[in-house]
Image (tube, rainbow, N blue to C red; front, side, top):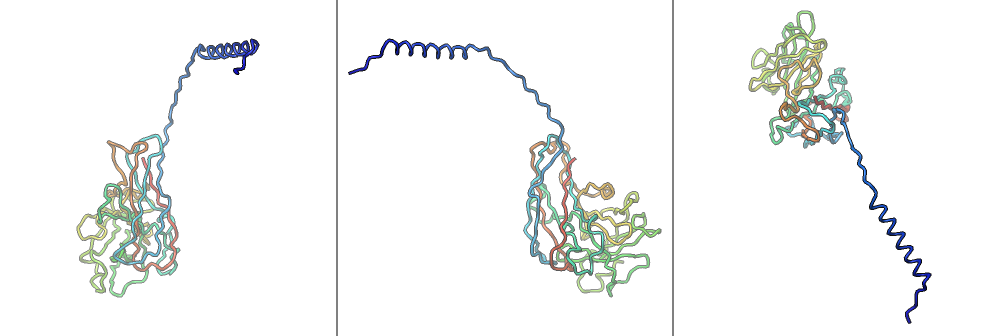
Length: 305
């Protein structure tokens, strides 16, 4: 049998439905309102390089091959566009004592072995270039080398498997940031012959470019084929004890007086816009004569303007 619903129960149901209808009607009839949102984004010049560490283990010095390269991504994570990017290593400010002959690998800075290829060159096998290779005075004179009377420093420039002999003459007042300072580099590698140490022939001579700088003498790049430092910038420390080999604009106002540097990125038309990405790879060339063990770490800095 169906159970009958009493009048009181029916009345309760009617009241509940009526209240529900009134509540829904009240919500539906509420007047909407709006809020205007305004956001002003401040200028934030910021890039991010990932990953933030590069480690190369068990690198054999003086070999034709070199470690597999590591890829890096630069992302514009700020709110402004950039037209140029440049790169440097802190080798000149951290490797300030001559490490040659010390037999301690920690006296060498890892950044001095770094070579880099940027996004516009990826895929080429011939465009690895030092970011900041620092070469020091050898002190001991090789038996096959006859130095000129005005020469104060000499040594080897090593890329990976080859070494090229060089010497450095200071200026008339004894410093290597003077206009008559000179660097000579043999055009072919040391090969066991005395001729490899004769810089009077088959050698490239560099002369100082522009005005003297406070800490460095910057030399005019040379594009001669066969020159082991072809297109590189060279800067000699004023005391003539070391010189720096670099290809990329560094952000150092003295070093960047070189007329031949390259930019890591340079596009004034399309620009490096927010959220854009750019790529570069690095590996290391460790020349002969570097002692076994851990070298001191270096910082590679990418700057955007």
